[in-house]
Length: 142
Image 1 (spheres, helix red, strand yellow):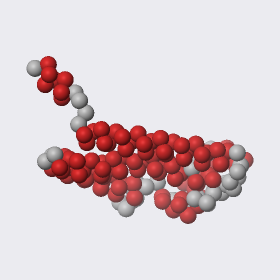
Image 2: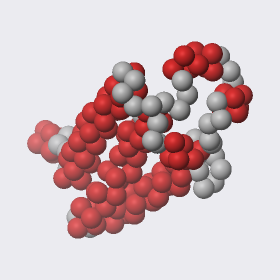
Image 3: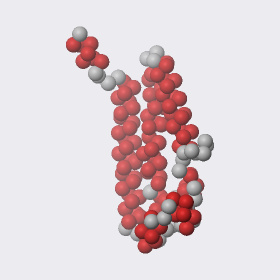
Image 4: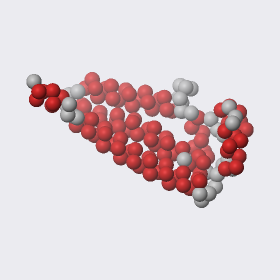
């Protein structure tokens, strides 16, 4: 009985793969986030919104901020990725998206283990997260 219990506590191959990809994605995203932040705060790369205007703009509501600062909605921030204050969004999107990659990566392993139901669940979860992040339904992506 104890052996079965201890065996059930061990991570399966799909869990180890998920964790390995999540760890690497997290570290890569964090490294890029630090680098892009340094480009921004050190003034190495040009900004879209002057740093001196940021405190004043942060007191505004979201709609008023977007209008006053002429900031695009949703994924349209990608058009401004050439500015350091928007370049910071790239690693944030990467960090948010790494879970989708993790789910997609375990599908083949689950399928090979004849865990087809969990493989379908992982695939559906990745699709749902992708749709939610895309903003297609008008409720996500911003």
